[in-house]
Image 1 (cartoon, rainbow, N blue to C red):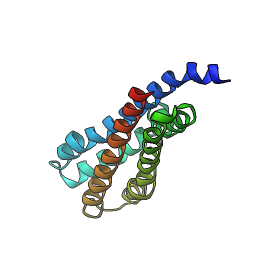
Image 2 (cartoon, rainbow, N blue to C red; image 1 turned 180 degrees about the vertical axis):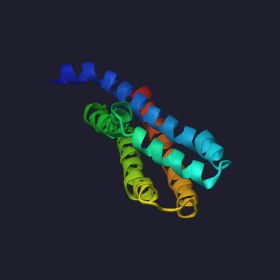
Image 3 (cartoon, helix red, strand yellow; image 1 turned 120 degrees about the horizontal axis):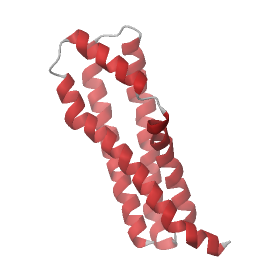
Image 4 (cartoon, rainbow, N blue to C red; image 1 turned 90 degrees about the vertical axis):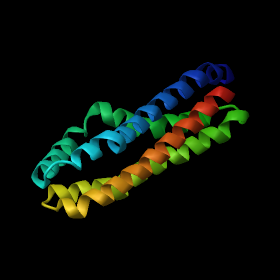
Length: 151
């Protein structure tokens, strides 16, 4: 069993780091480009665009990394050697934090907007929640990358 764990350690840490990096990149892109771009459009275009994007993003590619990042981080904790395990645990906690932020912040705002909510009630709060998950996912990425280097 120990030999199998040793063989899986690096591929699991690499996969966890990649999935988390893709998530961090998603939220960074929203923070640095998408939302600043949408801030320049009229209210109807903003609401329509966000509603279309929020439907489109629930797809297998996004969900594979959204759910895969914390799942793979948990696997990295399980197979990580003692010198790397603490960093993998930190990466896992931050990856779970990213999911929690999305669930309690961004998704309810998306649902309210889809149900006829206003841009005024949505935009500033959504941007703040997204910035928070950009920070948690990027920090998770750094922790998992460090765990991989220490493994």
